[in-house]
Image (cartoon, rainbow, N blue to C red):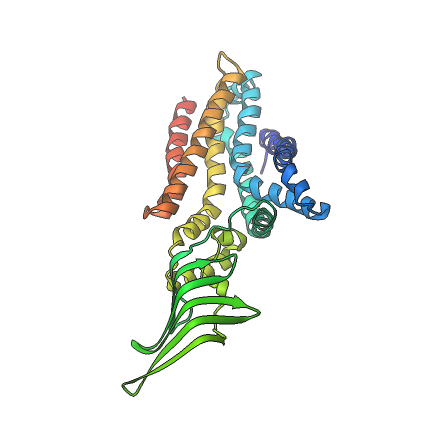
Length: 356
């Protein structure tokens, strides 16, 4: 049951968070549109598409930034409570520091739950719209694996392409091997493969079939055929994981693991961030309370400065470890969760000092 203290702090906690969102998001959108307005005008982008893009942009980036919004807003209103000696009054009335933390924990739980729902329902479609608009009008490269592509496209079929161009749907040195059990049944090679009008066009086609211990060779200069895989499945763009809900993402990762996708770490990082971001907001709440609940000589400015340093340190660490995981063999789970673990330890240390 919430008492007067709980309702008072919880109201201020949630109010400060949503107020900061309402104040900052329009500024973020304005800065972004000012940066891109030249390209938008040069491309004659329809107004309707621009408005949808801005909505996708807002949803997409607010998902990443909401822990920082929550942290800054908590720092601000708790520092204000401390400067007005309200925190001292609460604790002097016999309320323990742990009891003082309860409405913050309740508020953090509410916000983190909403964030999980938000990221599951709204963020995937917004991520797809944002990235597709960028690729279409801002000439942003649709980053994908393009060299030495090796994929398992079905239980029995393996495909290799030495070089693939996603924008032209064309590849070179194409090889398809079909196995039954561990026995190779046939192998198709083409100097070049391209996808046109739902048909694969193979140049320099050669098929070697093994039948009853004998090899049958078939060759054609140009051959049109159909395969049981989509050409885009060879090299899905890196941001495809962002456009999937959690269930779809797990299924996608399982399928890509079987296919031998060389970019699996990109997808693992996205998967683990789905849960690490809400947890980071919870940790930031504890740090904000521990730092700002103590009245300092410099007033709110000192607390906000400390908070800014902590927030920027988290963003830097999160970016560095995320990049390391994507570009190396470093464990993606550890890379994504290390900032939370590190700042979680800091939160425990700061809370112990604040209780004193």
